[in-house]
Length: 163
Image 1 (tube, helix red, strand yellow):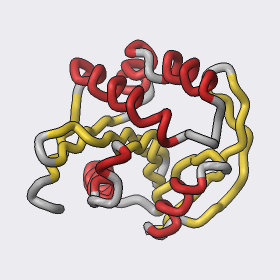
Image 2 (tube, one colour):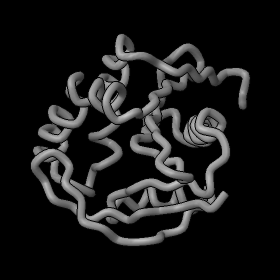
Image 3 (cartoon, rainbow, N blue to C red):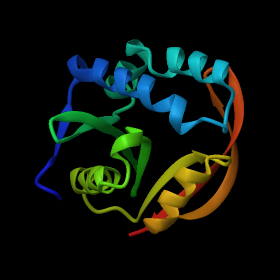
């Protein structure tokens, strides 16, 4: 990991940082993938502090924030089910992409959860940039599944990297 990247596991008190990063990142990450009004509604639902706290406290999701050059620039949440580590959320500020933050966060989650058979995630099937990042990092499309995010229905790819 680069010396200018610092990753820290966060508790519920730091979830407003995740919320703020999501509000900044999502309009870029989903531009041309989902409609602007959908982004706003989903951010309000999925990134409400109560929703994030529920993921952390009731569902066992662990959250990390990556700082790059003194700026909170990325976040990841993950959990382990059976012998598979699942990435739930992975987002990087647009101007910090390509600097190793996503890879460093993935490594951190894998180290935290210990040995796993695989690393898996869901990604919107129209999010070509994210799909390309995951393919570049050894993930393959395993399935196509319907998902509900907030009040909207989408289709995701389940992508998996065998470990």
